[in-house]
Image (cartoon, rainbow, N blue to C red; front, side, top):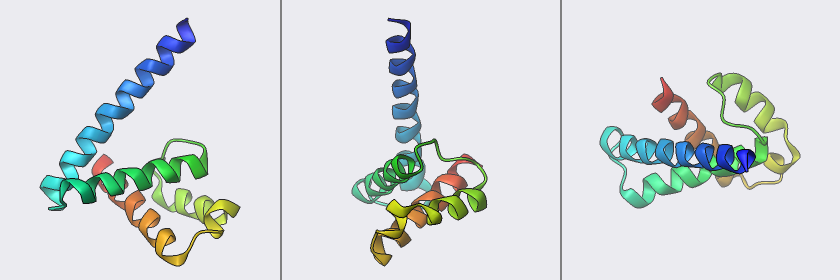
Length: 94
């Protein structure tokens, strides 16, 4: 039960983080709601590939991220979209 509560709390915190990130993208980067949600979707995809939360150190993340077989299998367009999403998330966290 405690693990479920912790997992639920973490999910709620991440959902709030994504709402704040989406609002920041819309206000700061002038993205539409759909474009901002696309960026968030790419962040979630990057997290799944890395199997961790996106760290603050963008250079380390990109170095390890680009070495993952799952990343290497992606098209150049998707790779570029994921890298841009990570950089935007990093900027948001600063």
